[in-house]
Amino acid sequence: MKSNPNQTGTNAQQNAVPINGKINIAKWINEGWDIVMANFAEFFIISLIYVIVLIATSSTLIVKFLFTGPLTVGVFLIIFNKMRGKPIQIGDIAKGFNFFVAAVLADILVTVLVGLGFIFLIIPGIILSAMYMFTFPLILEKKMDFWQAMETSRKLVTKNLFELSVFMLMLYILMFVGFLLFLVGFLVALPITFAAIAAAYRDLFGLESTE
Image (cartoon, rainbow, N blue to C red; front, side):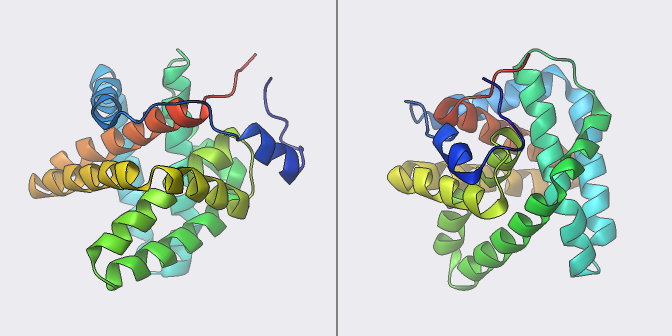
């Protein structure tokens, strides 16, 4: 049944009980690659929009938070629509602003926690990134508030902490390689990373059915 945006937090958490998904890092990354390559031009433009907005707002931290979280939700919305067999609509990235409050607050908290993790050596940062990587998909799919989404993500990842931390490490390596290939490489690596996380989310949580 499709989630009701007005459902209570308790119901949202009940609906977010993970399905019996199997950890498969290689499958998720390969699927991320396939999703992006199948619609390369569209995802390249989406990635370009995301990065331009990020750069344009990075000089002021408060403004950055107002955009990055909602745009992240918007990118996941596009990818999940693609997984459901729907056509890609680049303008759907703006629909992430329908989840503005939860997305902004989640972005602030996740950024602070992950940033602190990286300050105390790299490994804690990678682990915290893994713990909260499903926060934005949960806000989108389960209509959770920021804290429910963060806690649900953390609890699932904690049960498979090593494997999912390795998955996150692989995604960081992918992004780093893309960065070494300058802007074009990064603009390709970014949507692949989003799509790989979306594939992992689908296998571990399941996607909401749509009418």
